[in-house]
Length: 588
Ligand SMILES: *[C@@H]1O[C@H](CO)[C@@H](O)[C@H](O)[C@H]1NC(C)=O
Ligand SMILES: *[C@@H]1O[C@H](CO)[C@@H](O)[C@H](O)[C@H]1NC(C)=O
Ligand SMILES: *[C@@H]1O[C@H](CO)[C@@H](O)[C@H](O)[C@H]1NC(C)=O
Ligand SMILES: *[C@@H]1O[C@H](CO)[C@@H](O)[C@H](O)[C@H]1NC(C)=O
Ligand SMILES: *[C@@H]1O[C@H](CO)[C@@H](O)[C@H](O)[C@H]1NC(C)=O
Ligand SMILES: *[C@@H]1O[C@H](CO)[C@@H](O)[C@H](O)[C@H]1NC(C)=O
Ligand SMILES: *[C@@H]1O[C@H](CO)[C@@H](O)[C@H](O)[C@H]1NC(C)=O
Image 1 (cartoon, rainbow, N blue to C red):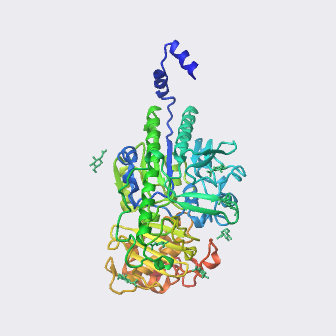
Image 2 (cartoon, rainbow, N blue to C red; image 1 turned 180 degrees about the vertical axis):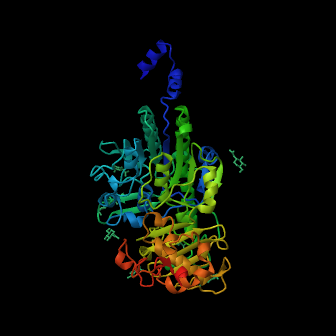
């Protein structure tokens, strides 16, 4: 290296001018590039973005912030498979983080390794690069059996070291795994991301680079590879880089009304949680600070990526997308640190997009979900959409966002199977194993609701206009309103519940565009596109007398087994949507 520098100096170059030479645009391509930064377990509700100055500078100030962006299954592996396929978990059947119902081997056995975004991008002429965590149980033993398809260059984090902040193992291209014992995971990953970016630029082809660090996920020591039947995990707070470990010493979890509330809240096992004592709360505050500290290395990585995109002079032709697989709760509803619930903390996740023609310094409330990301990526790269997508491209320009206020869907399909792990050091609740539920988040201009049906058939409905922290369940266990007085849109609650439940019945098994336009299944003439439309009095009889099949479960299962998931839409005898080709209310 030294001799190279001397040689260049002799020839009239300086190292400085070598640097400047690299800063020239190496190629000009009409097709845009994408850099996708995918963090792990980052909340949108607990304020994490407020502690990331470079994310603000490069993304929030220069791009569009989708404040109502949601994951559809609030745990990593199912959510990531949704994100890479554009399909809800009930259509991938990768529903868990561990075997047998979900993990890298299940992703493979479902045939998805040949049929997901990186493969489609390569087919369309893109070079694809990835560093960081791909899926759970992608391990030092199975990383090559088979290799993940669709990558031009990769450097994956592997189990059992994925969440070991100070002892990570990465696996590059077709090489054997390499340990980075003692180095800080996000910093190792940053170097890998920069190297892949260099490679991508040198290849002179349009590229898609994913950077997927593990922060602010908790630190996990995993005894066993994850392929074992009973791997033993020990969870602890995330670990920041040394240079960040003293930051934010006065910061605490925001004390919102749902933080460790005096009265129990929620349903099923959540309703049985005991109030946390001061020791537990102090630990949760520590856990929260460790998350913010661990995010600092990611914030620096974001800055590093932007300065390189600028140096290469390709920033104007590159979309940079920032999101996370699922959200996170700490202490809300008395919950220990974790995810897996349907409450706002767990399903609402950051999404920020910057790039050519994307509105700058804009924040919007239009509803978008992780099923929309794969369609969005294909759309913005000019690649035809696939018919089996359960989502739709996200509006990116100011005009598109404006139109979306009137036209875009207002619902999010939320689904979960299996257990909810507490990730702190206190009180792992065994009843959290029955954490299977179907839910619906709906945000229109005149209402803001969350409706859920649990596998033990308990129900929840929160009117988030008056109850943003989801503390007052309006339904009794059997799904009927517990108080007759509650009114939404001037309509009695029982009528609202009929509509919501019918909508959820459609969504829990929807495929393709039905998931985007579920009201069409109930109103085939297309005249109903919102909850407000469906609440029209002329549909009262239809929802009261005809659409009487209810979402329910026969038992709590760990995976997606149709035979215990109760009636399916279109199978009940009362399904009389069309008679003589007309919906009932037209026919009568
Ligand atoms: C972004 O918009 C806000 C107001 O909407 C304004 O106060 C702020 O200065 C803007 N920031 C930038 C970087 O343009
Ligand atoms: C989902 O996968 C499980 C195995 O993990 C299987 O038993 C189940 O039948 C599948 N469900 C559906 C609906 O295909
Ligand atoms: C770090 O990981 C290596 C394997 O990659 C393992 O041999 C070693 O024991 C681990 N070190 C610690 C401190 O856990
Ligand atoms: C890992 O598990 C094995 C077998 O259960 C046990 O013997 C060993 O002590 C464990 N190691 C650690 C570091 O917990
Ligand atoms: C506080 O709660 C934790 C978790 O339930 C428990 O382990 C601990 O013993 C409690 N501490 C005190 C001082 O009560
Ligand atoms: C979980 O649900 C199953 C079946 O629905 C039930 O038999 C079991 O008792 C439940 N377990 C707990 C811990 O609540
Ligand atoms: C019943 O509904 C009211 C709102 O009308 C709510 O404040 C209350 O918490 C609910 N009660 C129960 C037991 O769920």
